[in-house]
Length: 390
Image (cartoon, helix red, strand yellow):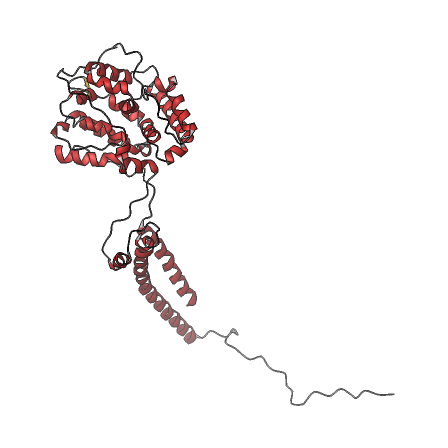
């Protein structure tokens, strides 16, 4: 039988290894080593802080430079399909580091229609000046029957959609619209109202009728709000296509309440409607200011516009532009500033106060905000990285 050999004995030279003392092994406190480590940490922290102070300003400068190219429209103008910039002008703009005017924010379609092309707006006819003294506000006059109404002529079939045409037909035949006698639309879309301006007494009666309706002003405001909503939904395509009738109707409906206040404003010194005084005057300068909410600009004026009624009118406009409903007054938004400047240049610097005419503009990117945000993020990143590596 085979007997296995005995197991080899351990070598005599083998010795159990003893644990070595390492730097990680707790030892008795060494004051000298602790002071050395503290000094090294402070030195590294000081170096990190120094680099951060140097890098943050450099980062801000780099962001400012890149912001000019990437956020300023110069960088996008070269890629735009409608760009009119040639290569020479484009490269020249890159080397021009002077302050440049920011591109104007894109406005909504109605704002563009009002501000850029006033030829499509309805012409506000002014009557022949009368030698008859301006009548005072009448007391319960007999109103004409029928009372002048907007769109009293045959509606043009030039609509993009049947729904929009049907909206106008229904609106002009409903009492909820006719009973409110909207001055904002009578002034531009009523042949009967325009023609009666040649008779200042009859015009005075009609203005009284627009100020004294069977429906309350609050109810009429609600009615007009409903028509505005219905017009927007029924005339989507026509508004998009800048159909003159649809666009101007929307502007007039939105200005209903303001224009009612304007028409009913009374000159306290004469007890006459300010509008009637403007119609009867041989100088049309004051009359032009009644068309601002409808998007028509003021042409050349004379000192005849420097009167208490015009000043009161501009105050009403300013209050409207600073109100919560300012965004809907697209016509006035586009015309007030220019009119105020012309009036102040002629009548005195404080005749018409400035207003927040930019309140309805879409929000635009502020370059300083964008750069600041990136700078803050990058600075935090640099600081965090430096501290983590310390």
